Image (cartoon, rainbow over all chains, first blue to last red):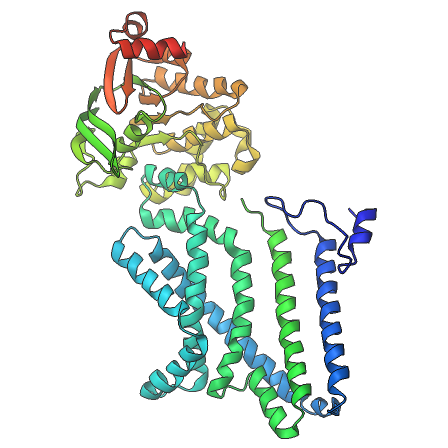
Length: 275
Length: 240
């Protein structure tokens, strides 16, 4: 519903422009809002980069063309980044789902175990976990870097997926459990057929958001010599000494991947009704 | 059919039910009344084992509900329960809401479960809503589906927890009519409700609960015409 207001509001840097109420329950951003936000981010990024660029040129000669020769390397790096992310996503949804269910279990032991796991993981930096898995456990079991990266990332991301799943389960009214149980349905079956399908539907946007985090987090696996996007640019930097260029390029790569995924999430969010 | 012997139930330090005893015979319709927070709904949840007792005994069909060795799921499948806020499964169509438990719990075949669901939907007067999702139904329709869902397990007892309290006035009658039909078919029913018209019409006995205690219990007519306790009289004055 494009109105006169939307045209005014399209320019995000006009601080005076207002979008009506700042927040309403259950409100979803309209397409115009989404596009406007993308334009806003683009404008800010261009602005910052431009300043940096002009300032840097006083001391630094940009040689963007050297990057073109590494198209193949970038492509391979991108594929590996996506491979790590998708494989990790698969395992951490399963593992995170189990931990999430354990954290709402009536068995105190399971609940405590889930709590300990989530708190333990959330309070250790991912880089430390990656190094620990590769150089510690990996040395014991002769793990190559790819499985080590997937194990480390899965261990880390599962804690976050578990929290999302737990939140989803707890957002389902207790009456749903009562309704299931009062019909003679067992606890496990009530979970599986009644609670989880509703819970997962509610948290799909959050899960997708965590996937975007996962893609970014995967850059830390460059520390264990996995030649994904980040390590590719480090290597290019070493080979060409074009530090600024290769790191700006990589920032833009991650930015485009993650922004596309975020937008995809928003579209997904609109497609799936809450109930 | 249902025997309750001196049951006590606590939520933390708060005692919800105090030495509550009551026997309910096969085919009886019992209406439980009392102020909100008096323990009526908790009592219903105790009967099918959704709440754990601190002490006392409940027997349904001679099976001890609070026995850890009792097959609670089998027991519950004999006890239908209808809730104030319906609690239909929002991600399932009406048909699946009704057939889900018979198929998963009793192992009834899909075809047989669907046949029964069709006749139950007809019985509650909404055969055309077979494919609807709960969100497409009015409150009264939701509650009628919830009753059909409970009946699909072919229970011997039905528990109703304020089934009309969340409904708009014009929808109350359609739900009560279904319940009146059930009572005529000699279903054993325990109903928590504020609908005194319904109570007078179909209840065999009225039980008045106050602060977790059974204050007064009498055949319907006696209860309304000549209540014995002052507390009962005051309550009836407030609601009638």
